[in-house]
Length: 104
Image 1: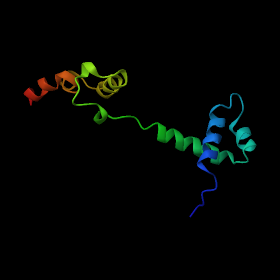
Image 2 (image 1 turned 120 degrees about the horizontal axis):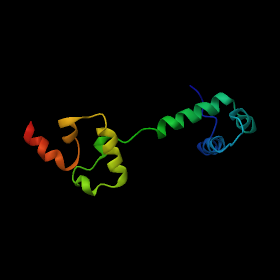
Image 3 (image 1 turned 60 degrees about the horizontal axis):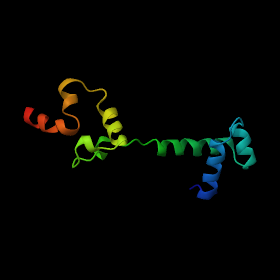
Image 4 (image 1 turned 135 degrees about the horizontal axis):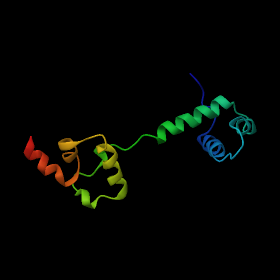
């Protein structure tokens, strides 16, 4: 089993340097930190994967009318409903839920 050689604080500092490197290459940042480029790229990839987990429609409040959702919630509903058309679109979010329950 692989041993965890680097503290989480070190990883965060390395990732911060890599993200804010400007015109420098990842190789130069890795060299400065005495890391392999592969290790640094792996950390960046893992961080992107973790932070890229998008919210889902299940995160939308069902007890609050759509007209009272904040901007992030409205944007999420828009993204979730974008590929839908017609009745499916009208039955997806907010106040039209009551209409859809009558059409089943």
